[in-house]
Image (cartoon, rainbow, N blue to C red):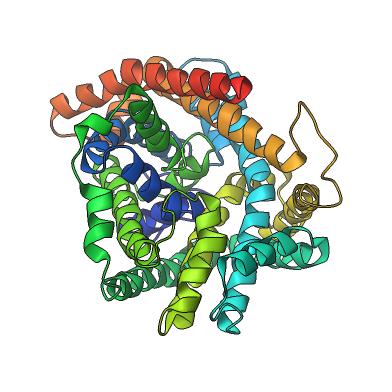
Length: 455
């Protein structure tokens, strides 16, 4: 029987898929959020709990997304529909794909604004604007940026064009070519910065912050933080991994490939922590500064260290590359669906979607200046898009993907796609996707919603 292929193309190798999916997973949050929550929740003890959550929740759902994508060989919307019909169920399961694709478009609309900030800092670091800058001046500069819609629009527009230009190139000339360049560049930049952090005199302190094994810091809240991050860090629930899975070669092992992606994603996050926190501690800065760590405290640190402006420039280039590889995957599901639905080329599909996300992005960047007073349920437009996607759409998408794979897809289809020689591994995954993952994601959904509404 001849292998069914996607009309969009296919990855030329398993390793390209691994790098592309890792690029999807590694984004802005990975570089500062994971190291910070690790240090605040017990270091090595938290990492251990996080890895267990990855094994029991993240990997089973990721395997499901790749499996459904490769079986359907189409956009997530049509793959969900076809696999549901093949399993004897209603085509309305395509709604799960719709939620994911829509979430990707919505996330990109505000993600591109933040990525625009990063591009602004790449240019600023390159020009030496942050040399010997103080924390008060750095804070004012960031506030000035947020209050300047014209500058925000320029960098937001630049990032949208960067992303849509890659997606317009298709699987091989766009996504794969970009992956071959950007992912090695990301790893090289990360390890250059790691080497630099070893010269700060505070590497031991940074290492201890991340890996000191302190079970007393582990609370139920820390476990929930680990659970939530294990889900969100792998780009689950939005169809990106399903779309990438549809281009995956049939002969490639889904289980082994997903394990490698999860390992690389975690490795990048931990190395990023080892690269960032020695610099933070060497300058007596607050490691819990959140987003401000990236845009206020770190520029001050780089600006005051010998050769720091060069490494600060490399740091923001690293962040920009991480944002770029993530954003590409956000738009792929919607673009693939438009090509399938309307029979148009990728360039016009990307132009239409690019215009939509660019327009939504204007409303998002306006939340910090000319639309600051526009509120829905007490949230500005930027926060509303973030809340709707992170707290509602992605957890629901992940929950229904787990329920679909665990309870609706024929077991013969599952076994055929996974091709596991040891049936014990299959049933371990099957139990996780049927029982453990749905309960865990439902808990993430309920608790995130409760915490957000209660705050």
